[in-house]
Length: 593
Image 1 (cartoon, rainbow, N blue to C red):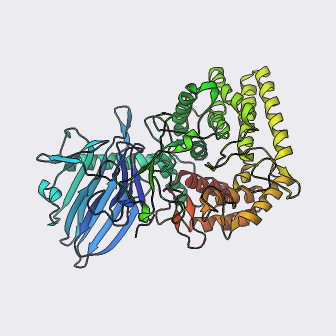
Image 2 (cartoon, rainbow, N blue to C red):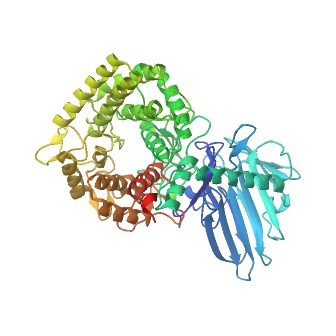
Image 3 (cartoon, rainbow, N blue to C red):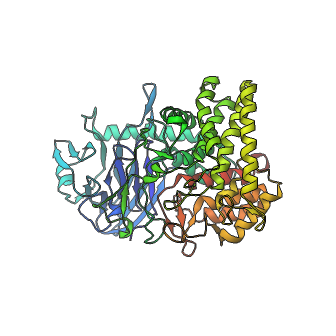
């Protein structure tokens, strides 16, 4: 049975999920949102295509781990006679000729460790979302695959026959494969694979070395940071929510969505987390992405999600060629959320850009010109803060005035006021401060429920929403404001289930949520820390770490009864929560010894 006990390899252009026996079970080409060349994760009954496996005949044991401080995966497979192989999987990423080299390329190296292992290579890519197989041609050292959305070449230094016919053979030394663009490789496959390995390993070691991490939980935070980096599309700066589509949020829930796109809300949280770790370049690239997106938005009106190339249209359809994760369809391509109104995104975009005006490490100098580009977003926020929307949880069957959306509209105006003051633009600072004060007053009047002694999910309502845990984080309320503590207490009472926090508990378009939304628990942990309940927060954080996969990854949802992960994987939102909570709660270096 399929599970999310998977590892992610990638290079910020492509991402592939690898199961514990080193089979590539999910990966889209030529980029994150392309055709899933590897898709057996979504079609477990189909043996004919959608994966790349290395079978050790008479297999007896498997071990798997990331190489230290890298995105390079090592799997050791052993047989019952003492034979064993090591499989190295990665996607090349390193600086070359003065720029970053991160092509649509995957590398697999299989080397003998002991004995005389007999192996079989099964490279069976799919095409057109699992409905067919690519057209195959081959030469003396390569096999060429022409699918509906890609043309790729696998260059190998083993027999082409054993690859095409899947003939078992005894591994004498090492077999290398480079799967990439349909171009003649400059050098033997083994030499190129080895060079790519050395350069990529060096890149990740250097990248991790420059992280500003706390003393505690270093391995967990490093893995989370690398995972976020892998989900940031190098070419345009867009940040995807996850590399997968349609892993259901709960068993047979129908909540199956395509997350291979850039949500403005999620992306802000990602860059904020990376900035916390001293990584600003991802933010700089993302800022260019949102500036280009907002420049094409009429009257500053944004949509919540965009394609990684910045395109606004993401038509949603059900894919007939894939049965779904554990057969729980539908599998969807595209996401209709791009048609929704979600007013919190204006605050998300302004927040993402605010760093540029205050952080002296950032290469791009922020000036009045950039500020003027952001003002239409503030104008939209000031106009829409008290209007109904689908909210941060993207309700498909109803709209209302969501408190979180209104607070984020306040954030847009509040931060614009602070940016204007920073730039010495006195009149604009006063303008945006006035807008922010108006929104703040209205939110406090209409979202505060005196009977419940709490802020509520929507204006004039009484339901709870875990996004209210961010009221202090966003600066809307100080931590010592009794209304913040009362709201946290109300969420504890209504949305906490054991060590997990649900996003809400009321029925939506698909019924009552069955599983907990992972990042909400991290928000709760941060709120506890802000309220001075640090010991509780640390205990709960350790509980969340115990729920990570063996590789330190998290999906979007967790079943509170079984602890099993559900939802798209690995989820950037969840990894952000781990970083933020860990860096807040960890013992400082100067108190560590």
